[in-house]
Image (cartoon, rainbow, N blue to C red; front, side, top):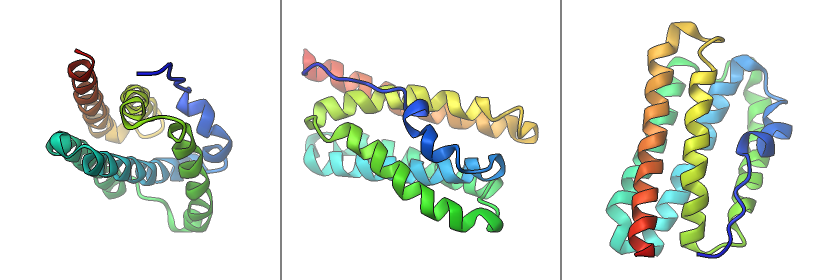
Length: 157
């Protein structure tokens, strides 16, 4: 692996996500989770020998999105704003990966999963009625991070 620069994704995406009201932020983040699922599917295509595990990570990203959309969807009054902002956030997120090969991209994503695992518990004060669900989403993020770390360790060996 080359020297990989891993950003603080919360800071990187803040100029976009800060435009979204708190009530719409979980649903907006669900859409970012779907973009991460697409990245995993791309890696599965690029590395078919690891496709099963990478597709499981994609499924977890989709599961996170599904679960958030079920309990905290984007309120209709913010739908247009979220539709404007999320493509910008996705483009910013994807740009981080562009200079790197697939293995380095997965190293970045492993760290992104760990950072993302902190986002859901941070929402508990705003949505205390969903504490258990938000904590469960954090666990799903960490499972994908653990998978990537193990895959990267095996590749380095």
